[in-house]
Each structure stands twice: as C-alpha cells, then as structure tokens.
Length: 487
Image (cartoon, rainbow, N blue to C red; front, side, top):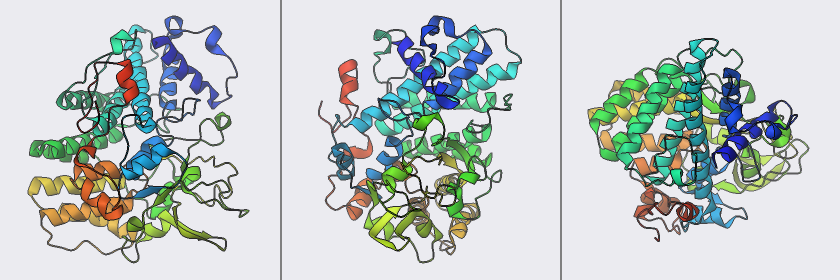
C-alpha cells in the first residue's frame, strides 16, 4: 500500500514540465527512490502537487470539493448542478456515504502519509549540500501534516492520528484519537515548521512554498479555533501572540477585486496559496473555479462552459451594505448585454488575463491564507481576550471595511455585537474561499444562519461535525461514527 501511494505522488508531479516524458515506473519504487537530496525535493514537490493535480480518482485536495463543501453546507450557496451528493450538502440531507466527505478524508490522509514519508527519508539521507536543505524540506512536511490534520479535525472531530508512513494496511487501521491529542500534534508540527522554514535555500522553489509568516498565521488560527471550542482564554491569548508576528508585516491589496488577478498571485496580502495552472500538465493541473461558479455564455469573450453549479443564496447576495465593492467583485449578473436573471460568483475570473477560456481551465490559485483573514482573526482574538473590542480590534476590522469602501464599524459595540459583526464581515469577505461552514460552527451560529437563508434545510445540532466516511469504516472497523449519524 505504501508503494502505491508514494508512486502516485511521484508520477503525478512529473507532468509539470512534460507530462510523463519519462515513464519512471519501470525504474523506481519505494526501496530505491530516495538516494539524494534531489530525490527528496522531487518528492516534496509531488506532495504539494497532490493539492492540485487531477487524477482519475478525482481532483487534488483543493481542486473543488474542499471549498465547495464549506459554502454549500452553509447559508452562502445553493446547488444547481446534477450531483445528488452536492444537493444533499446544500440541503443538509447528507449521510456517511456522501462522496465529498470521502474525497476530503482520503485526500488529506494521502498527503499526510507523504509528509510522514518525507520526514523519515530525510533522516536517512546524510549527504546534504547544506543543512538548510534538510531543514526546509522537513519544515514543508511538518507544515503539510499540521495543516491537513487541522482541516480534518474541524471537519470530523476525533481522528486516527498517524505520524508514521503506511507500510501495511493493518498498520494504518488506528482508532480515533481525542480532539485534544490531535490539536497537540497540530501545534507541535506547526511550531517545528515555523522554525525550520526560516531559511529557504531553494531559489527556484519560492512560489507556493509556506513561509514562517504563513505558519505563524496558521498557528494563530489553530489557537483561536481551539479557544472557541473550549472557551479557553489562554488559547485566545496565544492566538494573539502568533498573529502579532504577522500583523503589520503584510498589506491589504488596495482593491478587493485585484486579489484574485493572476498578476498578483503569491504576493501582496497572500500568505499562502495553492498554485494551479491551466496551461501546464496538459490540463491536469487546472482548477474548477470557472466551471463550477460561472454562467454558461455564448459571448466571444465570456466563459463558454461555465456550469454555474454553485450559486449564491439570495440571502447572501442581498446582505451587502450599499457601496460595498466586494459585491460587484464577487458576483456577476450580466455580461456583454446578456442578463443572466440571477447572480453567479465571478470573483476568481480575471477578465483581462483569461477573457475567454474554452474549457474552463484557469491559472487562478486557491488562496488558503490572506492578510484580511489575519486582521479579522486578530480582531476576534482581542474581542475574546477583553470581553469586548478595544481600539486595536476596531482598527483591524476597519482596515478590511475601508478597503471594501464602507464606513467604519459602529463604535461602542459590546462583546456579542462586535462578534456578530465579525461573522458578517467574514461572510462578505470570503465567499467561496473555504471558510463559511466552519466560521458558523466556531461562532455557534450554524443552525440559525442556515435556516435564515435556506428555511427548508434539514440542518441539525450534530452538523457541527460531518460524518466519518462509511467507506473508511469498511476499511477500518476501529473507526466509530460521529453522533447524529447512523452507526
């Protein structure tokens, strides 16, 4: 099993310069692949490639299911496409057999296993050109593992906590570890990553690589999330400590609509993004933003095969304040004289760089962390620490509002009113960026918010976690099911 997983990762990455120019399956296997630091670099590149590269089993982790899940299972979006599983997400009628949960689970654990392999094999190689090479590669692995366990614990709660490479099927059949243990592992991994990534010795491996600033911001989010889970003020204070490392070190893009332009990739307010390419890898490395979100149009300059499967709820579209620039940047209702009759989501479409993609391929990146998120998390942490907002909390949220072209937040708000304002601000800022479902969970507003936008939704208290995929429970009988789902 280990050989299969590793070879899939290696093979998937070879397409970036010439898709399968050389068939390495005849000459490489797990036992003979890791010989030099160059082999480790290639393997780490393949690990990051696993976040994007399309295979016959589905897209990379951030190809579509991750960010679609977060907005469909919320008050933000409705499903209009042909997939029953997506409709079930939108209506909260899903069960453990829903393929989207299985995809996210498997996608995370495949890459966690790659990180585990990289950590082991980097110790087995002794001849490095300089120590920073080993440090950075290990930092990449710790970042990947910590980030993915963080995503998994938010989605599913207790998890099998595997920190060693898969050698046999039996070795990977683990019981679920308590959430407290998972968070300790996440924090340990990310703290190591923050230190080990300090020096990047690879001049040709900078774009798309995490940095210490990336990790500090993510650690701030981890502590903020755990603090909300346990109402732990110590965690809120630690979240502030990590976010303090980032606040003031980045700047907001002056115009919201420019965040997603291709010329601004990997710079400005972007702390870390997953780099897609519609022009490399013969179509295997593209994203699905345009296909899933944009309308079908026959315009010679439009997105010709947009399917508009995920569309904004009227509640979301109508919620923006007058003059908020984010509304026009996020949605499209007409183009080139064609009135679509309802809004679609266009925020990822760079009209200048990609005016008329024939098949929906796009170079637009999935932005995992950006500075607006840091500012709003910082305001949230300060509100929790002080039992209400201080001047710094107001300054943080008002920076985001100023960029959006709306007035400063009303002064003198109490703790709950400020917290409610943060949740609204996050909704306007991060449409289809993989935040909304868990924002509602963290703020304790999932049922209330979803029913306002989707009165017919079957949202229940237990939907603060998703079900453990049934397929995984067939493979691993030690996995228990989350409360509220059939055992």
